[in-house]
Structures are given as C-alpha cells and as structure tokens.
Image (cartoon, rainbow, N blue to C red):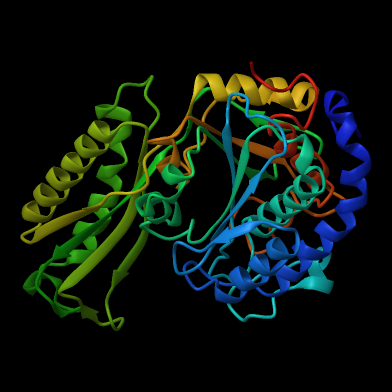
Length: 403
C-alpha cells in the first residue's frame, strides 16, 4: 500500500518521523473528547503545541484557534493559504475493541466522526511546516475550528470575526475521513460535494382521550403517521429527478401511556439539497401536506424550518490544484454526499476545496459509517493527509507552486 504519493516523496522522511507522534496526539484527543463549543481543554492543548513550534496563535472565538506562519521565501500565488481541521466530538457513547486502549474517558462524548484525526493530521502538518519554514512562499494559516457538529457552525462564527479576511487568505482547504475509501487515497469532485442540511419540525395537534374510545378523540398519532408517509412523496413527485434531494423524518415524540390518546405529536427531520430555493419549496410542501392531512383527520398542524449550513461547492481552480498536488492518490468522486459541512461558510467568501481522506480498513475496524458507535480510523491515513496538506503550501514541494 502506497501511502505517500510519488510526487510528494520529498516529504516522506519527515512525515514518517512525525507520524508516530501524530498517532499519540490522535489517541490523546480520542481519550479526551469535548462537544461542540465546549472544547476548552482541547483548545488549550492545541495552542500549547503550536506555541512550542513558533506559531503566532490567535483565539478569535471562545474555543478553537488560528495559527499563522510566515514563510522565508517571497510569496507566490496563492500568497496566503489556509488549511482547516475541526476539533469537536459528538454526544455519543462509543464501542469497539480496536479502540480499547484509547476509548473516551468522558462519558457520553466520543470522537465517532474522525475530527480527532483531522486535528492530529493538521498538527503534524504544523510541525512539518515549522521545521521547513524557510522553504515556504508566503503565509500559511492553520485553522483548528470549534463546533462543526452544531449550528450555527464554528466556521460561520470564525468568518464573522473577520480574522481570515484580515490575514489575507486567498485559498482554503479542508478534509474529512472516509471509511469507504482505503488509506493512501483521497477523493474529491469539482462543484457540488456536500448538501445543505436544513431541519424541520412539525407539530400535529388533535384531541386527547381514552385509548378505548378513539371515536371521542382526534388521534394525532394516526395523523402524524400519515404525514410521515406522505412526506416521502415530495422528492419522488415534486423534485426534478436530476436534482439530488432528501427528506427524512428521524424523530417522533408522542404520548405518555398505552391507554391515553395524546393531544400532540412532534415530528423532527431533515431536508438535504444543493439549492436554497429548492429547500424552501420542499418545506412549503411539508407545510401543505402536514396541514391538509391533519385537517382531514379533524386536527391541525404547524411546521417550522431551521435553515442549515450552505452546500459545500468546491471551486474549480482550487480543486484542480489539489488533484495535481495529490497526484496518484487522488480519485474522482462521481456523486456528491448528502451530508452537510460548515466548511461551506469559508467557501462563501474564499475559493476552496474540501476533500475526503481514505481511512477505512479491516485491520483498524474502521469501515463503520460516520457517527456509528464503533467508528474508527486507520491512523496510517495521516501519512497521506499530511503529505497532501503540506504539499498544497507553496514552496514545500518543487513544481507545486503556481506562478
């Protein structure tokens, strides 16, 4: 298995030397996860390491940080490049024998999405760049971002501070582990990569009563069940078949006892699409269907939309550059993912590309999907991740600097 692409082989020696430390950093973070916007100890630990390596470190938000390194060579295009990792964990209890020696020590919190590897990978890049500062053309900005898993999104909050704009960032890149791809590979596509993940709530109101006398009540559970089924027709009958979209009801709250028909039922779900107008149209259908079905049953319904992150749309120029740097490690991604990512907030103002890093293997028991309790990563993937991220920095690899 080739983990470092041949065109990035000049980085191999130092990456091989740094990798064991990156593994230890990843396992430390995995043992001590913190949920979104509560990553105080994680932030302190990251800032301490960056300070030791000579970075100027900013903390524009309550958690997370931004590290700045000015190179020793005249700037070439892009003069200022940013590399981003997210640092938060999930509110989930984990499982898995492959992780036994470094399982989470914080009950009900775990890195079951790969952010611990994202952070450790970027720390490895940070150390490599600090050692070879004299080669770098221009400025490098390293973003250790809080709160990717929770709205409004740490990316949004960081962009609102204006720090990246002040630092002059011209291009930005980020990655995410991919359990469906083997280590040594990345996958990416120009344009649509990840969807906008909006959320909705529908509250169905009926008239409560005794379960033995349903004719004297208006059963909101029956109405809500019909609504769930009818919502499945929105994508199949209202959306252009060539436009990807998802409507999923994932949560239903109702009732207090087996013999009581409740007054209300609450449905919660998600809308995934690549177009804000399409999201609004889908929500309008949710309102119409919910209202009419509930009314037909003798009740009523109200719906609320909670807008999510924008869609991740990869810039053509930065995507071309990434694929050139990654060389033989880069595989084209045929279809976009319908999951969401707040990396999209950076792309609203800065040309950028988000890509997937292969991290799935049987040896590491790391083929479980994101957010699964057994989610794990093959740590060898950081050799590829560090090489590609460092290779994007102008001056670090001959031939990878735009002129």
